[in-house]
Length: 246
Image (cartoon, rainbow, N blue to C red):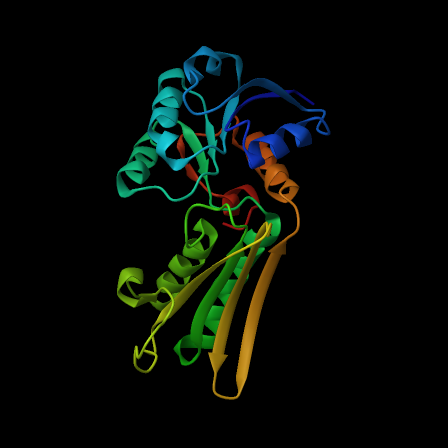
């Protein structure tokens, strides 16, 4: 099996360190470079087949520009991007292949698929709420995974997410709107990542839950994405593509 050479961005962070540890158990990967924000990606990108980024959303513009310049694919695992940063990713994906996802877990991507199917089956008669919990150090809220769940629910219900999303409730907000999508972020301890989608109707409730117990789940998924991405045509891909769910 040919060796896939990778450059890891955000190598000193939690996910970067986990990714580095996982590579040692994968015989078909070689780390060609480990850098962090502020380091020169251009100095090492020529030695790799694909870049894996677990740094920070504000480093995305420079990352994708460098990947386009050197025609290298990228696996992007950062979240919390601004509209401008998202547009830079979309523009770069026209020239190089990019896997961009909020969560590399196989289980979470099954949760995405199941959530869409449940929304289609249960219909608008069920109220929908999303609850996510992460460790105390997570900077963005809600999580990228929670927002992806909210987006696919809005798409399934054919509504604009910004018109129906609710982040928490306090005081006297009034009765719940039928099309409302609640998204609630909880932070504490060392929780790697829990996500629950609640479908509630009079007399019954359906809950879909995924709980991540280790960051290795995400690291292994990122490596799977990197392996899959090399040699692909330019375009924007997700883990749904990698896993054959789309």
